Length: 344
Image (cartoon, rainbow, N blue to C red):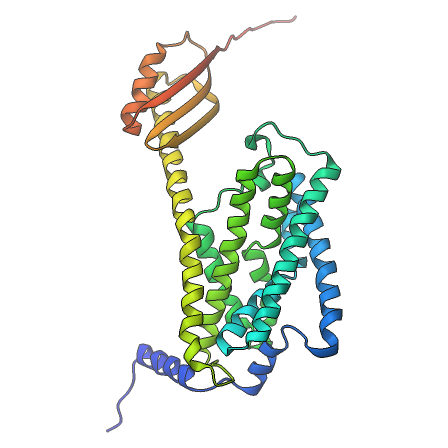
């Protein structure tokens, strides 16, 4: 009597079959065609360079004007996804020459995008006293966290699924929007030009995160589709994947530190809001800067209210009790005055 497999068993069997069966010839051709070879290589490099310059320019102007729509447009024009996914494919298929080609193209595009971002900021005469003065679109790319790593891995997996399937290539621009490649590089150039080197390093970390995660995720998805080394180099596949995993782990360390710092800042901000509400429920926070480091908080507040200010030490104690750590508070209180004028 034949046995009926459950849906989960059927999916598992199909997955194991895909691991053991080689990919179709069309799938291999689609991956091989990512970077043209021979006489078509240098025309491809010229097109790639032009698109890098244009996309980085669009991204830089969008970042400086704080326009999310323009930055998204730059993501669609950016050509970096192709050599990055080609690097993942070359890793799995043990194509050393193509891997070196892909890495060289990525490095060329990285330097070009940073240079365009720097030049755009220089021509625009961009100035800022502190990082807080930078547009929000730039600030958003100067403090990466673990969520960015998750986005990059997921987007890389999507790219790895799309690559060998020509019928799904229409979804590839969505992957380019989901994971930022050129905007962080333009941010590196902009912040370096205005003198904020720490922000430049953080933006470069975001790009490195996306790069390592995409190469790793593309490699895993291609292996799941049955891709293997085309030459007698199967013994090196595990070592190659180990290197990509190590790269992801290396970028995950500073991302974890940044994420913990962000969570500490959020906890401090919540403590401030709750303490102000208890201190004077008629007062409102006009401006707030709250930073936490090594368990200590620094808070600068501008508060406005209709009544006379309550003792500031009570507010400081309220924040410290909720934050569960020492807090340095700088408070500026402004009283609201209401005037009614009748005109007949």
